[in-house]
Image (tube, rainbow, N blue to C red; front, top):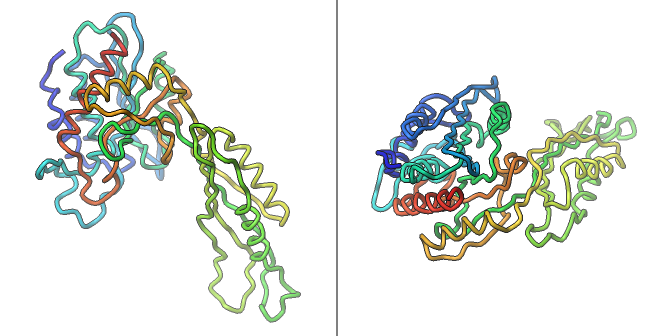
Length: 377
């Protein structure tokens, strides 16, 4: 199927020209719909949620051509705030030399454009279903994004057999890294209550700070694991410590700390919360927690081989399968089917003057087209 929508650079520029700081709604989704409708996709756009984490717009699109596998592509149109100091308007895409500049060029409007361009060049007779799972809430709390899309898919009885997430996984050059898993993430807030008092009369007060320090010392001494064949060791990091005490002569009434744990598939978020609660309880501390996502692993096999083979055929390089990095919406989609992540070079994501090599966009279009043809052919 050929279309004017096969110009990946033009498609990327259209998306980049739409300001879409998370949570995203509006024009960027209208552009996305305008790209997909001529390719025969049914497009379902919907807005969910309220402030402070919403409203968020999401887009679910699908096209079925006969009986065959269901291939899903997932991504996000929201971007992080550009901040001051750009050499040009971050939402006025500009090609300078061999690079296309704009907020979201690599994370991840560029890969979305490459997938749409790949769709436009597919043969008309490929059997199966292709869907796009596109959220406006990945860079933010991710409360009203991919999870809401998954509910929408379930209501329409759309369940993919495989899902490719277009996150910027490449490190040194396009195609050198494909993610087949991610560590889980949990944040915890530890509070120790005491009794406020004058520092000259400590017997009349109960200082919570030494107790909290002992808790944190014990947590720091924890060795969660030594890593696995596919995952690096889990790690605990103390990310905040506060007593809210502006006076030098007052023993505070409470002390709090925050920790963040990135964990592999030897743990669950719930098991780690119970482990930290047990340590905190030794000093009378309490714990509140939020699990951002559980770990997941798509075992190497047919799906990762398909992606690696397409990369090799276009770029000539051998791909490394990895589980490193932070979390992504793949942590949710892994509940549905085998998931892998592959996209552009991540060197400039979230940075000033974010940019993608024009040739990388064109090569990624070719890789995605090969993946689709081989997955559905």
